[in-house]
Length: 406
Ligand SMILES: *Cc1c(COP(=O)(O)O)cnc(C)c1O
Image 1: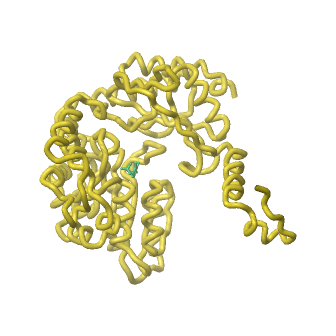
Image 2 (image 1 turned 180 degrees about the horizontal axis):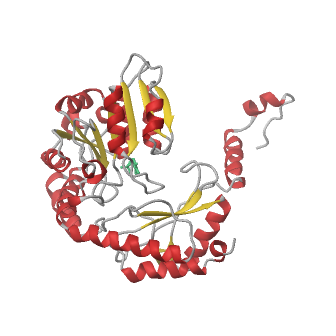
Image 3 (image 1 turned 90 degrees about the horizontal axis):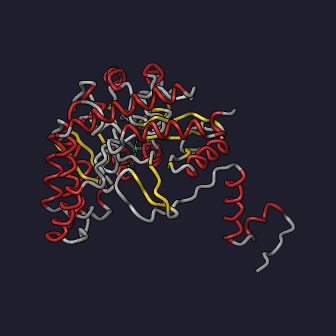
């Protein structure tokens, strides 16, 4: 159907059909090389392979850092628990959804993180939204790292508090944000490991600023837990910080632990406050118990099997050596997140496509996930990779014309 035409251009939006308005927005994304497509995974052969378009692709962009997502011990825990608890939780935790499997996982997480208590959330995204919104409101101040994950940014936004952003990983800049702020609660929020750069937050420095300014420190260690430190205790524990310094610790199970769901850990009062006030906790269905059962198994394995972290460390070194020999621009990261900085959106996409044709799956990351003009290939390593596969990736990168010829 043809849209009505308006004489006054200001009214054009009003008479344009809804789908035409959307189509305009999509064309705009396409023009800026920011359009996103999904790839359809047809089959999951042995890790780290996935079959797409009838061909097995070697995956170098998942967050399954420890290689646990397909571990048969997790899938059998899931199966056994489903027989016992069914496929769905049936209600929120505050109604009938909180079962023994969830409760045991909360206690194990409290133990693992060295916190008094822990509380399960359905996803890390929801945990961040719920926590920040429950702890801050209009008149409060949130001091936030420039490169924080979208869920922390969104949580700060919906809380209604004043938000000031500090220069990435710069504690002095964080301190400056407190200038002239008198009343109200004060929160510092940061990723533990930055998801698109791979560098580790200076949580010790931020803890000192927080102490000086009488602020609380909230760390989202989505990419550090399970990966960094002994037993995978994460970026906060490796800095020697406990509940008194980092009052709120957030983690997800969707990354190193290979399952799904998330948690917040901290004091008794914090957890009771969240149970009562975090809207993304109160108004949503509990994660199915079998997922919690698989996560309990994952947590035990992640703690015990130190070889997974050792292997990761050596793969990271191997990758960095190889990439340096090709003259690629890596970032200051010692974690399994090893982005190759490209800059231009179109070029990042072309390189990703070239790698795809060679049988490698490496995602191109573009704005708004990363700042403008900093598109990158986000290479991630996993304990499921063989050293030879890393060498193969390096060789493929060397064959990418769009990458090596500027
Ligand atoms: C992935 C991620 C989240 C979201 O976790 P989900 O459980 O996937 O919703 C939150 N914070 C950071 C830093 C992340 O990388």
